[in-house]
Length: 64
Image (cartoon, rainbow, N blue to C red; front, side, top):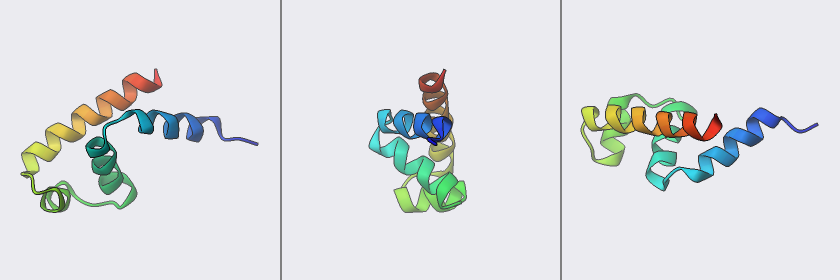
């Protein structure tokens, strides 16, 4: 059978910007800290925190 939740998440992720996708991949798939993610994306930890919150809000909106 098809995992409907996983399929929905995958489809919603495709609607995010590349930067949002990368950020969420680093944070949740690769389990990087905000500080590590900030270094990889050449941003401050505060910027990553704000970006992450916006990306998760965007993802939630797409899934509702």
